[in-house]
Image (tube, rainbow over the protein chains, first blue to last red):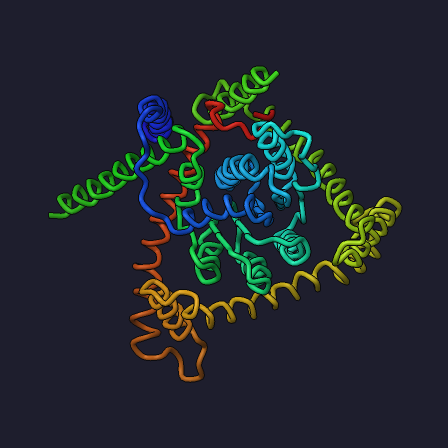
Length: 247
Length: 204
């Protein structure tokens, strides 16, 4: 009974905390620690518009029907901000994905970004692409975008496995700036070795807050910190109880 | 319209989530998930149309690499045509499309991946001359040495002591820590979507 309802209690607690902190953070400035990759990303958004360079956002192949959906949704939230900020650029951002549902949402999110910027007419449907439906198929399709479409920055945010190395290699050959984050451990290791500044673990979910997506994104980081401390306390408590039990 | 979309999304999310905790909602949860699977199938068709339209556009404008786009369209059309006539389970389709093209191409990409990873490891210290880069490379080298298959068995100390300690204590602990962080990030992201704060559907 406890095992069944403990996750529900945790979700409700997180939801209440998220709502309360969002209201609290609405009028107070955020204080965020420096994450070099996200600082670079922020800078590249500005450069994209000023220099007329193109961004390629790879959202990976996270299906929304399984546990990989979290990283896909985080990638979409970041894409929404990028689309809004770069919509007036001469070279519109291109987004690629390796899952059909994610592909549809990618197009919708890109269009929403253009609408929010008030330049709906500049939206080009083919800037949101599904490049393949298997890991290597997706990587092979997405590899061609930096090579053929005058991309200056490759941003990888989502679910990537070891195939991320192929995308990273293609970007490196074109001397592109690369920012990478994955929710998959193999993907993270590959991106760590292949990018200037990799995002590790939950830093993938912090991109929105650093790009100015709003109070709810900053509140999410605070909720994650609170929950992380609760997990640490629970683990230490469990270890102490087990230790006491053996004495 | 946006309010209706958000309402449908929130209601669907709450019902599916509730199905995990309340047996009374399990039926509705299954129904909604089945609808989602059907929609994912339809989305795959839309995805193929999108892929076709992107590459047709490239061919029409004569962009760099448009020969590959033409190859893709021809391959897609041929596979679709013969797949409809023969059915995907037919021996010829299995032998030509699957065993003759898809599996060898994926295997070649896997081989390319191995070379890419090796090359990335060599360049790592040029790219990252910090403590984390050195630790990463040293750990990888130790694990490779410790798990190498040698005629005389494991390398003393590295294979019998250091590798198991690094992989089963340090790496496993670190991996669990990262996965807990990812799970917490996914939870808060999911809650934002559930509250319709983030709406990756239905526009702004």
